[in-house]
Length: 232
Ligand SMILES: C[S@@+](CC[C@H](N)C(=O)[O-])C[C@H]1O[C@@H](n2cnc3c(N)ncnc32)[C@H](O)[C@@H]1O
Image (tube, rainbow, N blue to C red):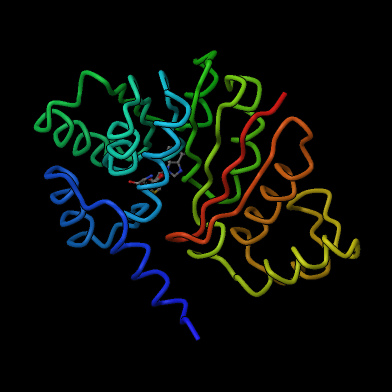
């Protein structure tokens, strides 16, 4: 039997390594116990940028630029980084400048949910990786700003500050038609005692799966990535 940790090691060992600046970002994250997206999901972001031939990428929650660096490796012309911790954003600016990547970055200090209102798009790729309770709102804020064929990736749909067992019970309940939830405030039975982050992820997955203009697949890489593409 293949164990989940072996699958994770295999995906990591078979995927791309870090470039120099990512090595330093990863060391900085380890020193500060900072939850970046990791190389397994980073490789998917690189792939998404490449497959969409991305001109513009928007991120909700950029930290100090690790996830953005993967989109840039995939050839994205421009990444809009949003972060409400000004020190983290400054650190990101420093990393990107040292790596010669800063001219392809826009650094937006402040609440990503307000920053998005100042952009019309179109975006070819979007990463949602900020407050889990606000994922569905973030999706609603960008859905009409995506190019046709554009993608939205949401991190932490399987791991993080969430109760995976409750999410699993909810997903199976929805599939069987007996755990429907209108929104995070009115969760289905499986989520009744779950924390706000778990409800936020469940609400997000319900929202993207119910949207006929999008097709969604959940990838069990890193902390779990939900990838949705605009088909209408
Ligand atoms: C999981 S980390 C992001 C990691 C980053 N995507 C990466 O992989 O390198 C989440 C970040 O989102 C930021 N954040 C949370 N809510 C935010 C918001 N509403 N607006 C801007 N930044 C936010 C946090 O300060 C934190 O740095």
